[in-house]
Length: 154
Image (cartoon, rainbow, N blue to C red; front, side, top):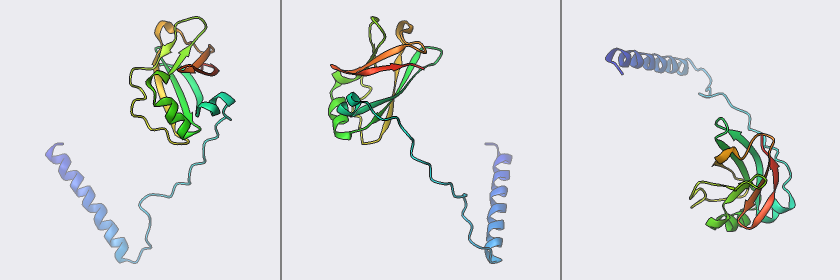
């Protein structure tokens, strides 16, 4: 920052401080520095399938992004202890499969050291090799030997 910019910034800060002190001295009521923001409503998620409840992890969405180079998959933890037990094993990292094409694997160590509390939402970006996943494709999601279901990519 140049010397002139620093001086101008300092003068602006001083003016704000003087104005605030004047308002307090005049008996102005205390005003919050930031306007109150209403609390956000809890997100409405679809009901998990029986397989998702059994594993403790729900697939929320699957989107092809980065000009087709990545698949963004969002997961929600529906049962913390079950999800931790499942995802704590490296071979249970979720894989994606389309038809008879080779499956897409999450980058190595994606979930290593992860914590999975109840209600947490996490994402994994999968490299979309061979453009396996396209919008509208039916994609199977599998955690190790546990198939969760088939989802339509967006």
